[in-house]
Length: 96
Image (cartoon, rainbow, N blue to C red; front, side):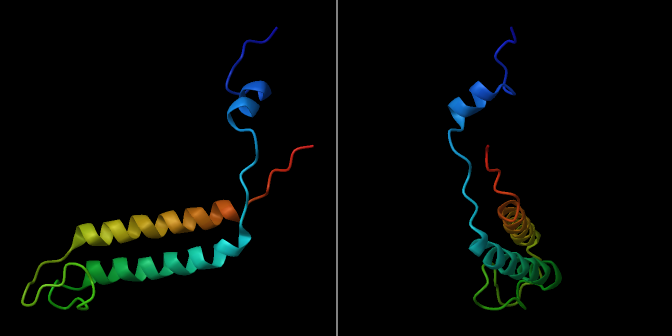
């Protein structure tokens, strides 16, 4: 007899009783959001704090500081949006 492991079907069904629903209608908005966040990340890396648009967090008149952390955060969020779209585009995983 096999011991109960994570790969055992009885264990998986106990913790994951139903398949995750795929919402294909969210793929396009997630990709658009990811592209917008990539543009925001590039703006943060390229422009100084004084040349950022006034509605961006970190805008400071007369400052020559670059907001690298804001750019990294926007880049991470963009990658998260792309990963979300990728997982939503995968197979539904219907069980027999």
